[in-house]
Amino acid sequence: MLDPYNRDINYLRISVTDRCNLRCTYCRPMEGISLTGHEDILRYEEILRVVSRAVALGFVKVRLTGGEPLVRRGFVEFAAELKKLKGLEDISLTTNGILLEKYADAIFKAGITRINISLDSLDRDKYRQITRGGNLDDVFNGIAAVEKAGFSPIKINTVIVKGFNDNEVMDFARLAMGKPFQIRFIEIMPVSSVNTGHAEDFLPNRELMETIGRHFRLAPLAGKKHKSDGPARIYTLQDGRGEIGFIDPVSDHFCATCNRLRLMADGKLRACLLKDEEVDLKAALRRKCGDGELDDLIGRAVRLKPEKHDLDCTDRHLKKCHRDMSDIGG
Ligand code: SAM
Image (cartoon, rainbow, N blue to C red; front, side, top):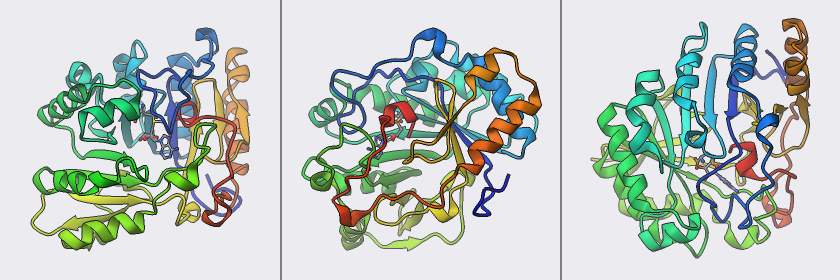
């Protein structure tokens, strides 16, 4: 489906739950968020219906996220049903990895073979701090489980917070030397109520790249190696087995190539991560609307896509949207 700026919108990110087993400091408020009641969360069969209409309209790619998708009961069975949808070419998962040791095999068998694992520190104490209680060993065991199960590619998403984990940039880069992982540095965004000190926390990826470039030879990867590379700038490391990716939503907008909509757990379809325009699908789904009405609602969200978001490094990053990232699904 073409949006008003001629972009082909064919990628749906789905937050299957707003619940999470971590409380990352830059993502979720300490007290938690006001969770959507179970009745108000889209049922799996409703999500499947939305995806099947989206696929009929030309969507080919889905990413499952959250909250933490693996905390929702029945997730594996849902993934297996999603996999059966004809025309859906690519299904991937973003997870914090805490429950992966338990679920890696089952998810893989269900048909999800691409995975992004969020990991912001390789130091146990710091990991516990930034996640407010997470156990790093759970994530390491999860990563070992996805390697063993055969996932490919395995991507590690890292948000660097200035003055907190910027001293670990090289440790993360070294991970990509020894393992065939893609380590992706994502610039911290002032999305939610928790990022009030964003200008102080923010470090442009350009600086991380300079740091890594002082130790390793980085060569830009021409074209996309993986279908799921999206807006990341990917570099190979000389003599390394993995890659480094940089995702720069703050310092270098990639809105011109944005191809996505976001379906949230409460049934709202969001046109842009950083803008609050949404279309409600749940009401229509619950009164068993026809396919035509659902198609119109998806089309309305596509038409709501702005040309670009207005995050700007020069205005001290004050622009925010009302939802927390843990709600939108990243
Ligand atoms: N629980 C899953 C996880 O941890 O990957 C999925 C949801 S989480 C919201 C998805 C991604 O959003 C994570 O990689 C997280 O680091 C990222 N994220 C959350 N808040 C962010 C922010 N303010 N700026 C940049 N990335 C953020």
